[in-house]
Length: 198
Image (cartoon, rainbow, N blue to C red; front, side):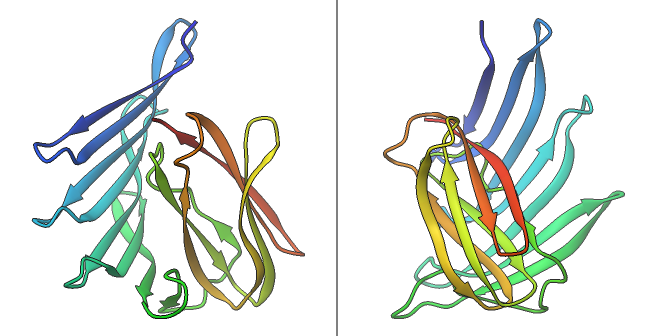
C-alpha cells in the first residue's frame, strides 16, 4: 500500500523548480506540501516559496529571498510569511564569512519569542537549512532523530546569544524517509519533522 509520493520538476539546467508531496489517505492521493524555486542566471536559488495543500488548493505559507555576492555566497536573506493575502516580513539575516562558521547572522531586530521554523527546502536532498529564533541568551541544543527516536546528528550544543540562527543539515549518508529535529533550551523544547527524498 503506497503511503506518500513526491513529484519533482526540473528546468533545462537540471535545477529543481517545483516539488509536490502527496499522502495516500482514504484510498486517494491528498496534496500536502508544495515548494517552488527561482534561480538567477548563475544558478543561485534566489527565492523559495512554501505552500500548504491540505485545504484542497495551494495556499502560500512562507518564502525566503536571497542575495548573493560575486563569489555566489549568500549575503542577505529576507524571510516572509503569508497572512490574509499579504506577504509580511518576519526577519532579515545577513551572512558573514571569515575564519569562523558560516552561519553567523545579524538581525534587524531581536526576536520576540522562541521559535523553530520548518526546514527548507522540505522535502530535501541532500541538504536542508534549519532556522530558529532565540529571544535571549541561552544554552541551545539542536538534534536530529530518526523515526525510531535514535539520535542521528547533534547540530548545536552550546550557549548562543539572542538572535536568528540558521544551520545547514547534510544528509548524504542517510536513507530516504521522515526525520525529526528538536530544538531545546532550559525553558522550552520544540520538535518538527522533515522528509529526506533521494
